[in-house]
Length: 424
Image (cartoon, rainbow, N blue to C red; front, top):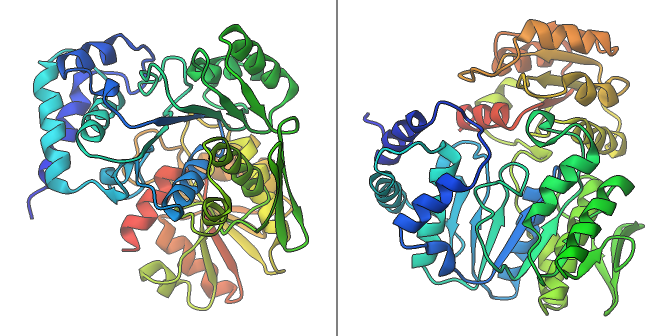
C-alpha cells in the first residue's frame, strides 16, 4: 500500500532544516507572510503554554466549549499515532485530503528555504484554521513560548500558563525562573492570563511579565481555587462557587488542570453547563488511559493494561500520586524514554510503588535511550529492572509471571504513540 500524500510531504519537510529544535520566529514570520498572514484571520484564540498539563487543559476547555454548543479549532503536539491528531477543524480531525492540500501549499510557498518541521506544520495548521469557520482556536505551545512557532497571534482572547517545572533545560534555561520567563513570552499587552499552580520563583517572573504589559492575571491561589471535597470537586473564583464531579481524566493533578480550564471558561463568560462538560467529557489519550481492546490487551490476559505519556520529574510525581490512589494491585512498569529527559528524576517517585520495571527502546526513535541504560538507571533508584525486546514481549512476560498485575506502559509520548499504533 502506498503512503498517504500527507506522509510523503511531511517526510519531505523533515529535510528543510537539519535541527529538530531551533527556536526563532524569523522563519515562521517569513512563511506566514508568503501565505497571506492567515494568523490574522482566526477566530478568538486561547493560547496555552506550560511544562505540564497543557494538553489536558486544552482538552477540558474544548470539552467545555463544545458542551456549550461552540465549535473549536485545536492545535496540539506531538501526535501519538497519526499526524492528523495535531489539527482539529471545528471539532473534527483534519481529513487526509485537506491536510495534504495545506501541507503542499506551505511547502510550495516556503520555496525551499530553511524551516523546521514544527514551524512549517504550525503554519499549515494556521492556514487551515483561517479557512474554516469556528468559534474559538485552542493553540498549544510546542516548546517554551517566547520563540515557539505558535507565538504569532497579535492579540489572543486569553493566554494560559499551566504549571512550570524543569524540562528542556538545554533550550529554555536551567532554573524555574528562566523557564517561566520563556513560557511567559506568550503574554500579550492587555490580554488576560490564567495562571495555574506555580513555584514562587516561576510565579514571580510570570507576574512581572504580565505587569509590564498591563495584562490582567487570573492566578491560582489568588483569583481562583480548585480542590477535591469527598467525591466531588469544588471550584471557586470571584464570581462564585461551583460543585462539580471529579474530572474524568485520572489523577490529583487533573483537578488543578481542570481549575485552569474552568477559570478560562468563566472568564470567557461561560456558565455551569460548560464547566461541567469540561470535567466530564474531556478526552486525552495516553494520560493514564486504560487500554481495553487490541493485541496488547489480549497479551496481558487478565492483567490491567494502562498507558501514560508523562516524561519529566513532575510527571513522575503526578503518576506516583495516581498509583497511590488506585486499588491495591501489583504494578509493573514497561518504560522507554528519550535521551533528552531526566530519567532518574522521572523514575525516582515511582521506585517505591512498582514491583518491577521492564525497560524497552522506543521503536523507530533515534533519540531513544537504549533499554539497557534505562534498566541501569531504574536499578540505581531502587527499581527491580530488566530489559525487554518490545512492549509486547514485556507485557507477555509480566502477565505470565503475575496474572493479577497492573501493567503500566510509560515514560514517553513517543512510546505511547507506538503502543497505540500497534494496538490498533
